[in-house]
Length: 190
Image 1 (spheres, rainbow, N blue to C red):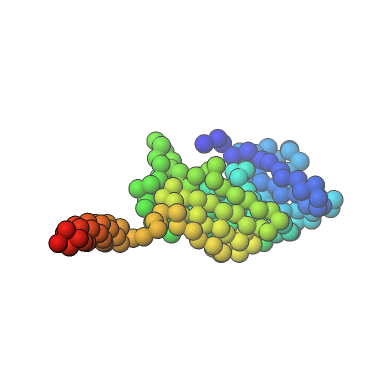
Image 2 (cartoon, helix red, strand yellow):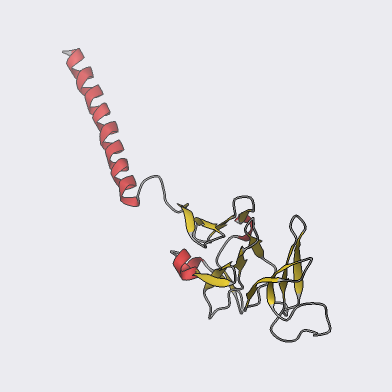
């Protein structure tokens, strides 16, 4: 993981800029504010602040008042996504999203819980969709952090015991067809 550095996200379609400043190790002589948050670009007016550093994987709502931050997963932490609405944080735990925690992929110091290339950000509708490593797709409302749709790709067409029942039924039906065929053949000879 790289060390935290100051950065800005400039929203060219609006007079807004989001500035992220690490809590320590930054140069006060730089032209960055002391607090991370959303600012009016032309006046420097503070709209809201955040008290946590987030790396640059931020997904903003259409009005820029809310965002979803994808967090780094250390082995002792299970926050997967943090939703921020006007500076108020709402974390979502990996343990609440994954049904099979063994599907996490571990490195020496971190783990991944979602398939990065399956992430879908819809800025216009302010939604973020993620697919967990165990096959569950969640679509979140970025404004609230609420889950608006869940699709479990792990589910099969029929439950496991149902496949066994269908197999037995198929064997019985095929066997019945053969029995009837030989029975009719035998009646036809008499």
